[in-house]
Image (cartoon, rainbow, N blue to C red):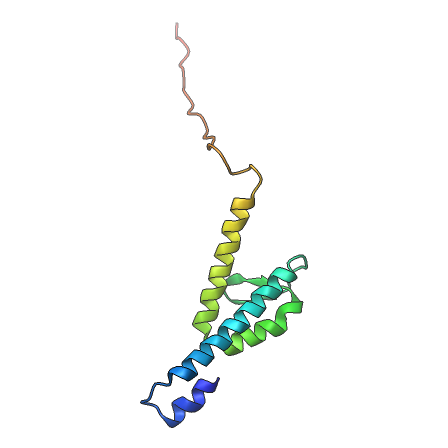
Length: 116
């Protein structure tokens, strides 16, 4: 990252422009990776990312750039966010299986037989 070069020469100085450029490059790499995931969604995922995210081999180059340009905590955060959003979308798109009133099991009422 470009941030490392500035940090080593001026450890007490904050360079907002370098932080902004690093963040922008991270966001661009993130967007490219997740766009690849959406584009290649029909293919079988064979690679494993952080927090259990699976992705197809065709997206491995964009994943490498994403991991290289972003902090590892950011990568985990964005992966979790993507997985959560996909899970919510899948639940919302589910066709009538989980919509409407929930049918709960009826309580069992035991009726003793009359004893003689």
